[in-house]
Length: 261
Image (cartoon, rainbow, N blue to C red; front, side, top):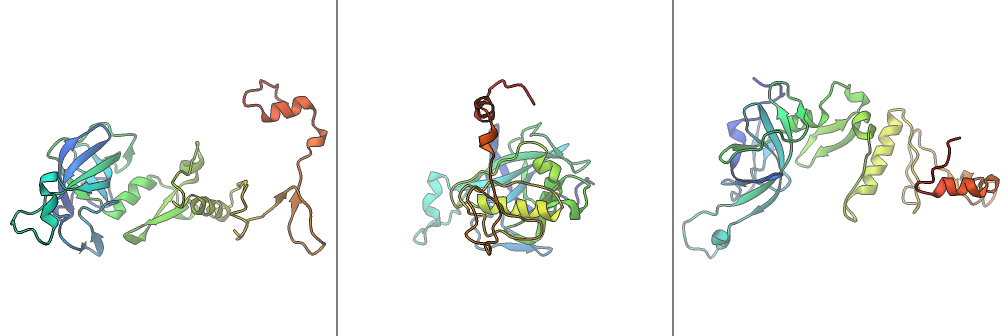
């Protein structure tokens, strides 16, 4: 019996076994990956070797949560997936799993980093979405006081949320390639902060958030003026004219050493 809401080592969710171990990733045999389509277990789809899938690697005190980031065939098996292939050998795909964190099997809580690397031959299981949800959220804060982030791509009924402290207690960065959803994520965070009654200031240099609306969201413009009395926009200005030259240097220098006021 573990502290996890669902047993992480369900034989029906078996994916494969570890065949190569690196400091931050492992390679896994994926014997079920060539099978077309996906199956379902207890109402949840099971990919068994699809890129993006979360997996659990077995351990004694800790289980390791990872994500499948690449699948490939060894060079000798590359042509076995072609329809003209006449040999009876089945392809033997390999998956690369990025190691994310470890999970204490007794308490069900995540552990900082991965204290013990997986070993060759250890079994890998498709992670149940409720297990991933428990590991990510890792707290007792009520659902109504959490920042709702997203649902799993293949499990739309499983919502993942974090406490405000987990997101904003330290530095927070939203990173990604162009078109990857950074602006959408920032807009979602602002809406969630407003929903929870928090406060945030968003500097929108390009105007891409000008249409964002909702309870608690107020737009102001820095500089400029109203076109006429019917213009609903609200304008603010920075009183730079009352600052001395030393004040300006203190405001914009990276390390000015100015005395606090």
